[in-house]
Image (cartoon, rainbow, N blue to C red; front, top):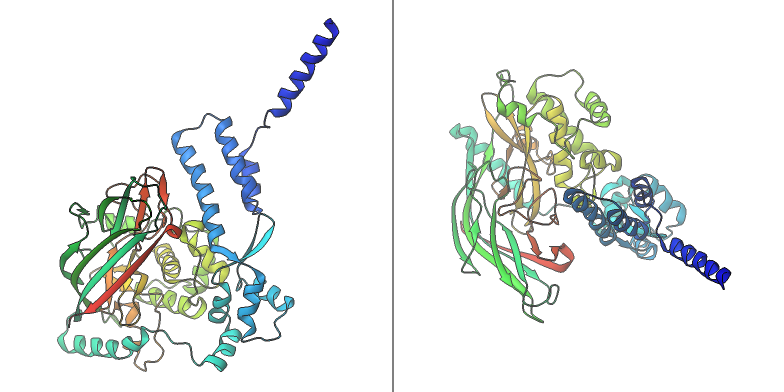
Length: 481
């Protein structure tokens, strides 16, 4: 009997030991995540949190890593059959060798996620924007690829330069617009009776180009508008609403404002030396994690573009030209899933408006030129959309807009018109942000859906952040003059 008890005790100890989980290391989590084994990595994160005495901040960051993996899955959801079917319209004989070549060139973005190869949702379309041969092939069939906003700029820009050369001023062609903006949370995305916190974009009042802002309507009796100042770089209108069962939840506002075009005729101008001890200079020539970092890739690219040039106007022009010529626009994955956006542009040879703007800002700062982020919406007729650009500072002149994504307009013959967007901007803008990745007001508890920019809005409830796949946004613009 005694021997039986001992044997049973040993079996119990062995059984208990087998149920204990082995200790998880950060190295293991990093390896699983890098390999695309997201299911394993998320389970390992949960175990790591359970096995270690972590701070609230450490737990917050680890849970956000799981969030980012979920976001990547939402971005990379296409299968090979869909990509091939799209490409066949232009390349009927497309084969695996062609796909592999485009993938190696980073034109077709794909990832192996939990053992399955998945393509970025917009990658097939991007192929015909980024690859020159594929673009030419598409234009043979569909006709020239043109941007909708160019239909406006082709008449607007010459009018701006002509008026400002005559007046000697820096602003012209003010446009008054009426904007209706809304966000709609899907029905039952959050349980009934829960309070939803919502931040909507709202125009800044501390920018010289944007004036006469008048709020017309909000679909709530209680709301908070962020003060328009450097302390709060993201301008929002905040409100709260309670969910009802089987009903979508809408947050909306309506306002009017005026926006002016701006152009600084800087060609041949002598610039004062920068006051390198000023707070402005130190702030806007500094690195900022995680996207404005002077990495070896940035330093090498700067040497290739700028060399030993020190004139700030010429340096800006060189960077502006290089990015225009080498990094075409393409649809991209969510910014929150990219560790370093400028390096993403360099590695993939393309980028959208915010990505090339961050590359421009980083290169400008590395060369000792103060530069900052600005964003909101492009408001061109038939071309309204989210948009990001930059501003650079010239001593004795002030802050000057630079729209790197719109780039050089080679359909103009005059340099002042071709390069207006390197030292000016058109009137069709709605400015919401004067910096990136800053806290919202009131403070958001959970990580933002968009961790860099703020345009579409943000939603959360006591259960966490509400990501983009759970709600939609809409905008309507009326032109009043």
